[in-house]
Image (cartoon, rainbow, N blue to C red; front, side, top):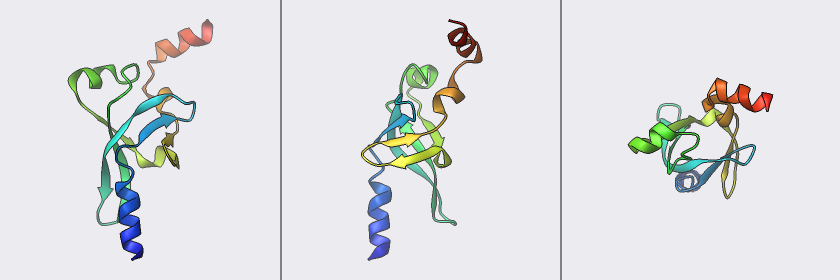
Length: 99
């Protein structure tokens, strides 16, 4: 029975919205990347992406995979660390610091 509960928890991630720790919408979970041998989730495959963060991927209809190690909390939504800083253009970041 415990294995069945785990299965329900994993599949319940699909469809959840993903936000950065600073509250920026990142995307929506469409699928999971799994390590079958280790029986662990290794990534979240996101679709319905934030077009400001992922302009190229959104324009082509591609998704992105966020490493599961970035996940900080799972509840009604999923919170992750560092996504804005990791995908932001360094020149854009410098401009924001100067302004």
